[in-house]
Structure formats: structure tokens, C-alpha cells
Length: 331
Ligand code: ASN
Ligand code: ZN
Ligand code: CA
View (cartoon, rainbow, N blue to C red):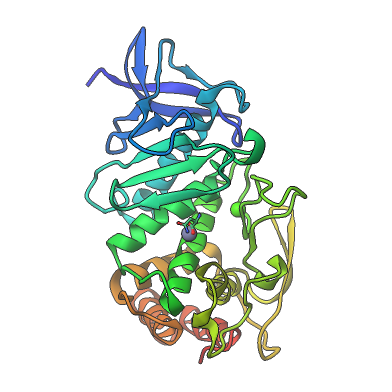
């Protein structure tokens, strides 16, 4: 179909990017026809409704700064495309719901809104511009985190409270990190930090740390019996920590220029299996073994089952999964 186009986007967080667009000279829309028709809309500071589909006459979008309203749309569309490509290429999943259908993104939500969120009800993603319109919440890991809430809803359906809520949140951080490593651009190389590009704390620090979650001042590093009583963004900590340990192992390590030093509950040493295998284990566990009420003990069983399926029950990968759970006090 000759309406399928590739536009040029000047993004806030990833330099110049290719964008899937539709239309022809004089009237293009931010509709990614090759990725389920994913569409990107402008809420123009409103907080309800679909907004206005982004259009452009020369298929060159944004100016790389927040002063052009198209720039946040470029990052949102890029994030949706990378997330789509990751799930398709790496896990054979076509779209968030696995049915080949694109979602929608809405940017410029409200005023000084410092968050982003996924809603199943509209199968849509919404992004605020950040305080003072300084840092739109459209970085790749934020986009992939939010859209992965849609994947969780369409698979395990982890209830968003208690331990299952922490696992739901962790799944979004884990898959977001896997997307970031998959994309791995010079401007936004893969790391085990969440929200490192959006300067949400105003001091350059990220929102969350997977190697040692307590570095954010609130997240837990290890499972304990009261974990389910904490906010889901903090009870995610131990599972994020598990994923880091499974990927990279315990102790000091530098990856893509970022230094980590991941502790273990019992002082044990964990040897990582790499993020690609770790993400295969988590996604298979999520999509085939976890259910709405899965807790940390169940998640251990789910990932062991997944690792057994993928690599064998006597494999080094299976042993590493077991060791990484023990290292966050789940055994
Ligand atoms: N950014 C938050 C999150 O994904 C928004 C929310 O829905 N709680 O956890
Ligand atoms: Zn979340
Ligand atoms: Ca990150």
C-alpha cells in the first residue's frame, strides 16, 4: 500500500529516528501502518478524550526540543515502535495484546504532569510533559514500561496490589530494560536504571535502580513477609534485583559505561546468564506460568519452569535462576 511511509523524526531522547507514518506529500499522519496502525495523538494540555492525530505536510517531525509540540510525539511514536519490534523480534509477540493490533499514544497530557500511564480501557498510552514542561516523560524505558503493563494485563493479569502488584511493576521495569538493551542507541544505551533520561528528581538521578533497588530510598532489595504491604513501585524492588542478578551476576560490574555493585541477601555469589536469556525466562514465565495471584514464591516456580523448558532442568541457566531467587531471600 503506497500510503506506508517512513518519516524523519527529531526526538528529544534519541537523536534523529525513522518513524512509521502514513499518507502522501502534503498530508502525513503519525500512523505506523507497519506496526498495527499505532497512532499518536496530541492532547494539547487537555486531560480527556482522544486528542488530535498528529499531522505534518513534509513527513519531518519535531525539532528535538520540547518547544516543538511534535517532539514528544516523535519520542512516543519511537518508543511504541521499538517496543513493538522488541516483542515481535525477540518473543514472537505481535503487539501488546498479541493480536497484531496497534495501540494509541497521547502526549501533552495536562499541565506539569510528571507521570505516564497505560490504560487497558482505551488500549492507550498517555504521557505528561514533566514539571515546567522541562522533561517530557517520553523516554524509551518509560514508554516500554507503561506499554508492558498492557502485555501483563493480556497475559498473567497480575493483580496490581500486594506481591502480585510488585511483580506487575517489576515486569514493566524488566521488559522496559530489555527493550532499552535491544534498542541500545548511542543516545540511550541499555542500562539497569529506570527513568535515567527524564531527570525526574532534578539532580540527574534515575527513578529506580535494579542492581540495588534501595538506592532510591524506598524500594526493597529483598523479599520479606511484609513485602506485600508496601507500594507496588517498592515491592517491585526484589524482583528487579532478581532480574539484575540473573542477567549480570552479583558484585561490581560495569555495563555500557554504568557501574553497578549488586549485593545478595546471604552474601552468596550469583553468576549471570546475560540479559537476553534472563528476559526469555521472565517473558515465558509471565506469559505461560504466572497468573493474576502469583506471589514471589510462585514467581520463583514460574521462572524455574520457564528455564527448565528453555534450557533444561540440569542447565546452568536453571541453576542461575534458583541462585538469583535465593539471593533475594526467596527459596
Ligand atoms: N507510571 C506509573 C506506573 O506505571 C503510573 C501508574 O499507573 N501507576 O506505575
Ligand atoms: Zn508501572
Ligand atoms: Ca533505563
